[in-house]
Amino acid sequence: MSLQERARGGSAGKRSNVRGDRRREAILQALHDCVIRNGYPKTTLADVARAAGMSPSHLLYYFTGVDAILAQYFGEVARRIIDRLQGFRGETPERRIHLLTELFFSGKGVTRSEIGFMLECFGVAVHDPQLHAEKAALDQYCKAYLQQLFEQSPHGADRARDSAEVAYALLVGLRTAEYFDERLGHDDARRLFHAGMLELARIRPAG
Image (cartoon, rainbow, N blue to C red):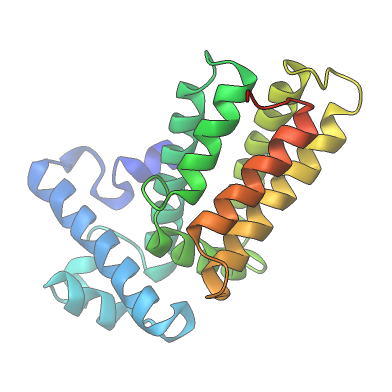
């Protein structure tokens, strides 16, 4: 099932309504809370249903299981990231680097709990074909976005693809390190990413 189909509710189909949408949102939030609290491997359908205030059989009206809820949640976070990145395209490369930095490292765009949840998803994606495909698609989009950014900067087209790979590794690595290493806070991670991106783009910051 595609991201768009899952976003419409999947099993609810054409009978989707405002109440159904609210219940699906409650289920997604319940899964998020359970995973952040217990980890995905220890999260059961009964746990999610209890957190959402419904019975497991009622929950199965909206989703086929915990894996389906996870896939939809991941897809929705990925779409939010892509939508934000799309909104930056009209800016200068230097401004886009600043906006990227704020999106991922300010704690306001992609939150710490969302990062934690996405890291859980990455682990599941190793063996889950659907989630593996979703993550691969997000990775490819982000790398293509970064490649275009470098092509439009003083860096130019020469080896822009290689620089995009390095930039994406820098993004994922620092964001993950910040999550696990208490010594690396938002400010340090944001500073390192911003400086690294400017260097890769061969942009000299004003002043």
